[in-house]
Image (tube, rainbow, N blue to C red; front, side, top):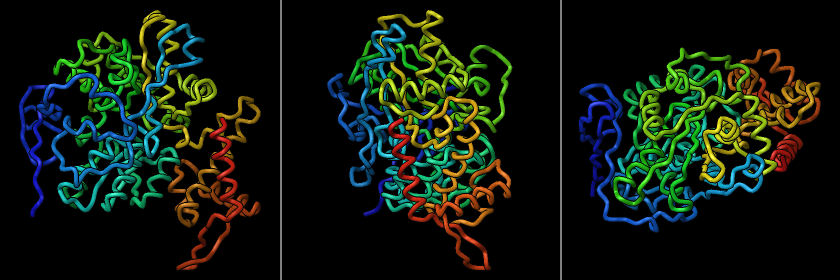
Length: 475
């Protein structure tokens, strides 16, 4: 019995043109606007059907394009909790501050919802290869779910990326290619390569099913705490905010809820094109070299105009947060609430203080911050563990050595391979680090083909990595 081709129904966000296709489409053929999946026609539902079930993302299957159960892939994603603040809320004078904690997912990010839906769709259409251009979380999730489904995964990543995310891709046996500095540099290349080599396209900006997967976050928020007054979401391309808004908006259309939240889009100051668009400012970007918020650095987001439109329609606002405040909030969130978030997530919590200072949010309003992913993916955290300026340099050195250990734990590498993976570091500096690690018996060398010297992690090196992992978890 052959595969059943799924007909996807799209609607253009610009001209409302409707398109039906078996293929993944993202651009309207009529006006070149953005295409989104039309909501599925579902039976009458009530709010009780939205109650979260831990690890049961597929309970919302009727809201997706139809994928037979035998093709559905799951690693136990979804059903993450909305946690009420015990300490930060009090310190800010807020009675109803909540955190939607997506670190509880299998690969520790909200993108596992995307991994489940996109890989299942690829599986249902008998694809053998899948491609994803991503600065981190989506690539790691697609790699994990592809591995589980037995589909080959090809990840395209920028030069600089959180090493924990890159390590996940390696661990899930993904093929990795480095291309450019930001997300913008990756997308066209991924689109062309998918056409040439018949890959399933799993790049967020090129596959509207990403939006469908992420909108389930809205369902779970409603099912657990009702509709919040304010929902704060980090923005890179703006896709996450659009997804969640779509989820709320469709449920209001279905009559399940009678109001919508005010949306707050948060970006990093100096890398805030959507914030700049909202205020009609000329974009200004800072250097990539010093940034720890790489996963949300997008120069020209494709969803920029639509995101601004949605935020204004919701009576919400935007905010750009200084990176130093983001990093200090990351520590406070871990120490005060027991949630260790990546910078993109701490960004939403850091926004709350500024919104309170500006008298935008009120004491008794329900405020929900989306925590998109875990800080365990970002080993630079070693630098944040120290607050004494005289030791900051030591933190930077430790961070580089940690990255090297993580890389060669996954597979033995030679010097130039390590340099290519690290980016923004000279080959001589790499060999200096390798020498110091070798002296301490944390790595060992061996000669392989062409008399090239490869480096492997030693048992002592693995113990050091385990110790650092424990330190980070205690932090």
